[in-house]
Amino acid sequence: MYIPKHFKMNEDEVYEFINANGFATLFSQYNGEPCATHLPLMFNQSEHALYGHFARANEQWKDAENQQVLAVFQGPHCYISPSWYETEKAVPTWNYVSAHVYGKMELMEDSQAIYDSLHELVAKYESPDSAYDLNDLEPGFIEGMSKGIAAFCIKINKIEAKAKLSQNHSVERQERVIQHLENSLRQDDQNIASLMKKNLKK
Image (cartoon, rainbow, N blue to C red; front, side):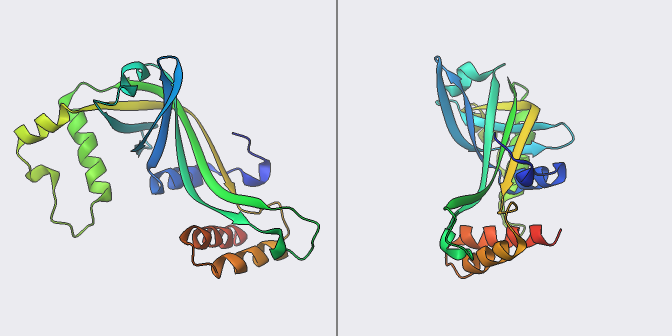
């Protein structure tokens, strides 16, 4: 990923971003061609690893083991109009936050490790007051469902992350952009405005 120094994220920011934007696009080579699947991934910071699973019918997993794979985590993004600046000598651009995570994929065979991975995923995304609990399901049902997936771990060896939030422009111009984005009804525009304001306070 091309990352000018203005847009480089520090380690804590990267980890927070990945945890908050866990639905990723996972790329690998399958039959000699690029292949991608959209799926949730769990980031284990202490192990420096990602955990997830394919549907077993999705054959991408068959070639992916021991490959160097790429998981792309995409955050909010939006168009930035030069009409918002104080000058006409400008061009349009796009603000966004994204992280590229590289690592070697290992398929998981241990049934307890697979269950633990699924339990952590459900626990993260279920509402705190939800009545659903994976532990309440019959063990046989879980075992049967687990046969329909190919669980994996990605041992991370490189992370590249970028927060392009107009940091290469003056504070005055950033504030103009924030004002226009805050007046938008688009959620991504609002989210980028919030990130820009947070960045200005550093």
